[in-house]
Image (cartoon, rainbow, N blue to C red; front, side, top):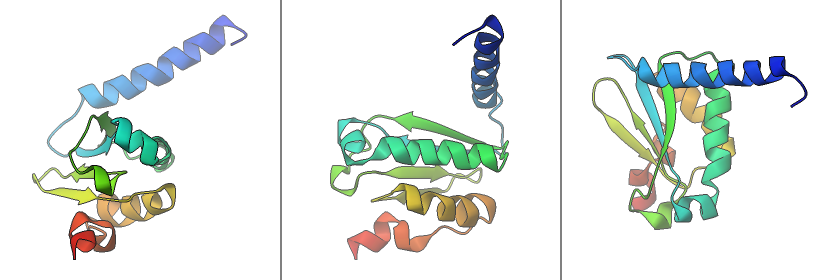
Length: 124
């Protein structure tokens, strides 16, 4: 950081992210990434960053991305849950950065879960 203006820009970016979370409404889609020790060890941090970047790049104002602790299915990490406004929840397992764009495009934008990445597909 080299200037006060740079610090102000960082502050504004972070406030916008906080405001997005505070303005969670009825049409908000939540992306929750498991970030317990098992998730982080399996690669959850790059997955979280990929979701944040994809959401920001597409300017999806009705989507928030958060992290959580252990989801309880460590053998399937990294785990991501998508919670839709209608109350439905889809659990994606063995996620990686390469799968994120497809999940955002098909599930978040077009409301069609990517079945091949879900826990149901891995349990078969």
